[in-house]
Length: 419
Ligand code: ADP
Ligand code: ASP
Ligand code: MG
Image (cartoon, rainbow, N blue to C red):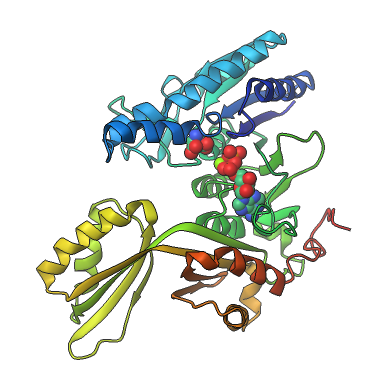
């Protein structure tokens, strides 16, 4: 008997028929003698609908109240799935985040899980019940409802698996695993049978929304066995996220995947005084406003002045610009220019470590297509470029081909299913 946490995303929970389908799968695992904890998302489109509704009343929604509203989508689906299970003879009980007591900090809209009280769940599991927990939500120490950021149900799933020391955390979604890039953009993308935590972490942080980044972080930290699978297929092993050591002996492909993020915006401060502390003066207030900054570039100074560029999530562009305007007046910078029609495209692979020249190959491929690179950032296992948004699909496609990701990618990995 194993304890399995299964997480079902919005599409998998998107209609009564699909919810019945999920119930049948849960029942099957139970019938095989496993204990099952299910984490669910809201029905697809519901969280967006709730956000739009909130914005009709308050254009910049109060963060606490927004969480009260957007957490309701998952409260509906837990009840529906519990009922669907009961209808097929499986004893099931639903829990909201607050009912479990998934304790988080109080950062509304992007709260972090601090602790999970799992005793009640264990007692119900031992009594033979299937447990359904609302994804994406928790409660802070003061009892306020919090949410974990878009796609946060993945993190609820992994955090519960860690707390319950589950044997496996299965993320059921609308694709049958993690691909070399989003298969909706590049139909030739190949499914990976395994991917290392390190690579999955980069892919997620660079925009591959198949797993929320914090879920990968959690799984790596607490050694949760994590697998991505399709909720629409009954067979297939999906993609297993593995610890690097397991692959040490195998020759790594140089690039494992291409990730991208459309929701980027770029801000440039022109003519900032070139003196110690200016980066802090510019970015400190941005951090204080709880805005995450991604790439940062400071140019070589000239005539006592320097230019400074950084990227933020597009949804925070206006807020960041407003903060910068105040700071720039204060420090005497010349001008702020912004562009919220940019995107980021990244190549990820641990094999890059032992293969120099990947960056120049990437730049050559983009230049051959006439694509202008606006910003560059590299680390040991990834290269990211900021581009005009209109080039996103083209860039992803040509890079995917140039790095031969459309060929069998599992050659050097176990369980290759490609050929
Ligand atoms: P869910 O609602 O189940 O959480 P998401 O929409 O959040 O599903 O994530 C699944 C989607 O992630 C897929 O439909 C796919 O379009 C997208 N995706 C992006 N990058 C990848 C990738 N590298 N591999 C697989 N899917 C990806
Ligand atoms: N329903 C939430 C969202 O749409 C959480 C999730 O689906 O994981 O972001
Ligand atoms: Mg998701």
